[in-house]
Image (cartoon, rainbow over all chains, first blue to last red):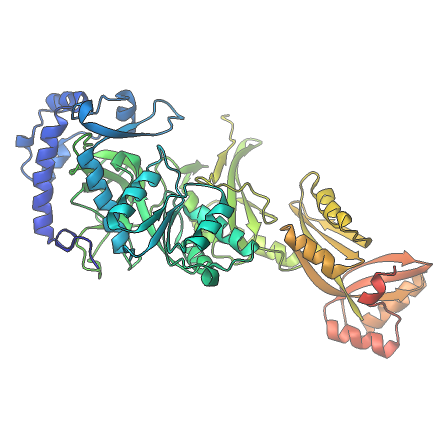
Length: 432
Length: 141
């Protein structure tokens, strides 16, 4: 049941003691990087000034912008000679962010991913197919090394080419997949179109879904379509990649591995810690990485800590399913909202498919939201039924969002299909 | 007594209609009657075709949102009086007409009618001995 029982079920006292030791060691390491040397000197921080985990608050936050400004090697805490791999973001909005790894870092990361996969029931007897892009995207190599460490037979199928994915799943008798949720739905749809019932004609049983915020309703739909258990995984390239946090078989929150990171949740505006259980931005400090430690890194991901103990026996804290990124937050007419809120409502209607698009536009002097959503099929030829459906969806959206969107039902297959991360929001607003 | 009508969900999108019709044209499906009503956001096209089952299968294969509905197809003269008389049989039986459209063949009008009660409508046709066409007649129209 456990990959590393001692660590996964370590008492809170001992876990926090371990965190403090590792934090102090991390500070000593971080001081070798030009960036942290400057920050620590300016703020009078050293490992000696940290006496408890509470002292973490003395350390300033690190932001994505810091990583960009110190592109490419300004954050390195070991000589580049000691690094064996780097991962970089695409950098579409400025300098890319680079994360460096030593061999020890890669080994630890593989262990972290193996621990997650073992937790959801994947074993060395399984065939694991990874549909992530390889290369710079960490979902490829991250899962690859984790699955190999676990001893599963790996199928590094990489992204796209749905028909080939299906052929692999059938020919290699794939039992487990790593897949982004929007693509999981797409894959299932193509299987059914091709006359393959994944519940009967494949051996699929466990899938790891992540990289995109998705609602509980979407998870259930994926589980039904594919006849599998789907587990939510969370990772980000700045924190290695996949494996930072993962659901256990309880499917109630993601255990975040506290022997790897120290977790804080802050209010993204005041930067103060929120009360336990409240929604805020996830802030992480790496305590098990040598090439590029990050101290109090603002992830921009919004979540909350789930209170209470998990029945699975693991002592590492659980975070809730992601509510989106603080960057994804839509502000419309002064109302703050997240695409996931809209998705949660849409997925409750069996008449609707999984594909939708939110467009923000300026109409006259006012900003409006248009939601286009595909019908799962034409189930009626009666206008009043379709109009009634439209009204009911709008009513539920209004209750949730506190503003009234326009809703347009569209035919199945008419919204762009995305095999990468789905783009759900188009902002065409003009600044008036 | 009833025939299958195909209803197709249409977005208000340029070129969508001809795209769908050419799918049927390629397979030599003839369109006997068609009607489109629309709201501001979407429309439903209702068509009577020479081979409804085949047409429906083609649409499904091409991932078009479509639905088969059975409707009555009754034959009447083409004068307004003939129309009125035929419809009166249904209204007298307490039925209301949800929608109706018609087309003409050889000087005869064929009314496509959808009522709120299919069974009662069939009963009216039997009792009043109204002329109707059935699915096997379509191929010859």
